[in-house]
Image (cartoon, rainbow, N blue to C red; front, top):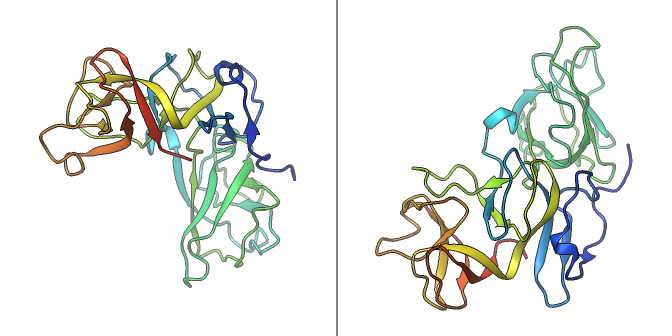
Length: 271
């Protein structure tokens, strides 16, 4: 334990944005940028290969435990977390069966006896696999990054949630769904194999697969209301109110975009 969660923002050259790897080279979410101001976040692909220009969304919320709610372990077995705690025991009925499923994710305090305890957030460095077995040695343990300490001590009355990192196990945005299943996080600049790591563009001019005619200077959307022939594209504005129709703006079209091509979009997701 004890390594830094994030390095300084990295300057990327023109070739680095296309590099992928089976090994993890940076913490998930690490920010990179090019000299012209385009911004990228370090991400890991999910279970399906993705192609250049695909609009990418976060892992589907609550699927396969992308969030877990739990109470803290009984204080008769474990020390109650203090402001110096970097390891936290969860109740024995909580399962973290896949080791490091929440690596680089977040520990959030969602309920408690006082408002000062609630709302705290810390980043998770690692956790072993544990099915939540009964007994004093069975409760799952979570290790936090040392710089992300609590500001208010907790009690066993607190409820916490474990949240997967936004850039872990990302998937191609599914525009054909009847409802949006997770937020858009960026656009893929390269072909990425299953579970490989890569740089995901989140800000600046970017070629993105387009559905519909996107007029220059208009917003383009990740939409649930207008289906398309493929996932991973952005939609032009329609005659309906895009916000009320379940659409999320991802940027602005610099030039007129045409269905089935990679249009020039100024991404405005994460600066």
